[in-house]
Length: 296
Image (cartoon, rainbow, N blue to C red):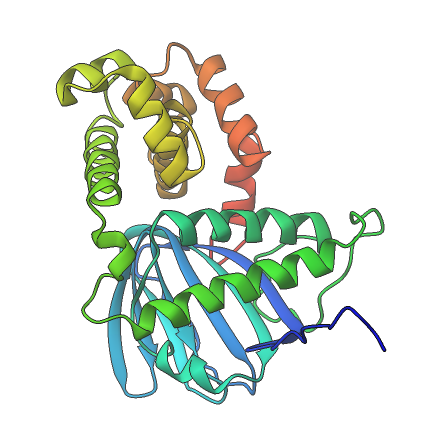
């Protein structure tokens, strides 16, 4: 007689296949081409604002929010404003509970946001670029992809969907766990930090400035921001500056020196090195890619 008893794992959902992996940047007044297909598609807005069309309804989706399109749903994306970017991943999944998540604006809080970042990073390790080809018919695996990279991507996608399904069962717009006093205070602080950062993209602000304005210690703000956003305060600040630089480059109105001055970089060299560090492209390389694409 066997002493140890095994507990079977109940798989609530299972990602069977990935179909596409994209990162698109949209210029002003971009209008996509409506499409429908027999698999799921997750859209995460990384920057700016877009209008998502889902069958006969329209939704405005902003940075930090997402949208899940169901199989065979007619859908499209239109840019709202000057510039927007989106991470899009599509997949096969059999799960009845996903119906509670589909076709509505999804808010990504700290935990979900960090998973999305890991998901995109893991996909870049597994799939060959470029990631902005609309008519991509098949994903190409990298020859030097890390061991178990595809399984890591699958696990992250399943975890994200499980969390979104759990949240959809909660009463009200905000999951109960986010009503915890400590969590609510942390989110409030992070939101205030982000507000200061976004209002300071064209100026210069230091971590000491932010801490002084919020009356919290530097160590506490660093800990809370890293926990919620997955990066440091100044890393996020630099990312926002470079995202704004991409928008300015796409407009083709300014030289790199002018953009560096507008965004308060110490020099055009500092701007160029920061741009390459964050985007893996030089400003001139990015500008060439903009001109070579109808969608940027």
